[in-house]
Length: 154
Image 1 (cartoon, one colour):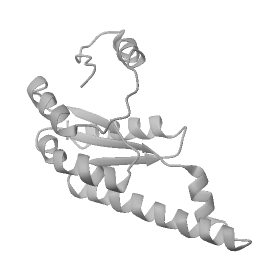
Image 2 (tube, rainbow, N blue to C red):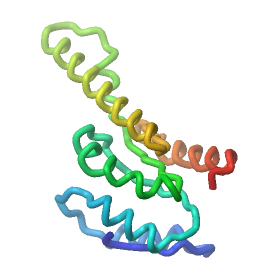
Image 3 (cartoon, rainbow, N blue to C red):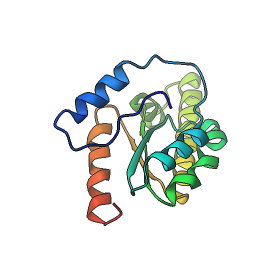
Image 4 (cartoon, rainbow, N blue to C red):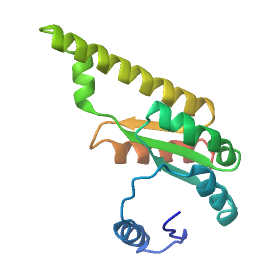
């Protein structure tokens, strides 16, 4: 955990989150979900909705997120958001013109199938998964929030 913005009902709350994220510097390390989720449980006692952004990489999710997820889903609503690459979707559905296109299509179909399997595993463990194309992720996450609220899960 490299930054924390405490939940508050303030008019500038979005700005506070934006500033906290702006000040972060990227690091090429695996996420330590176990430690982050443990700190979350200590810090936030009330049921909350937590949004995790992921690329839904099958191996990374299986090795890091899935083992730690049970810590959170018992007490909190966990939403995993991901941006789906529209180009991969086009490669998967476009009729191939040559061998290169056929191989590209096979790779795209395999990548989408692995992504769907990963999302299904997360859903099976109790997470809400929002996998949307660029420009649709924010509204899709807002829709997920509204659905969680409407169903009384928060």
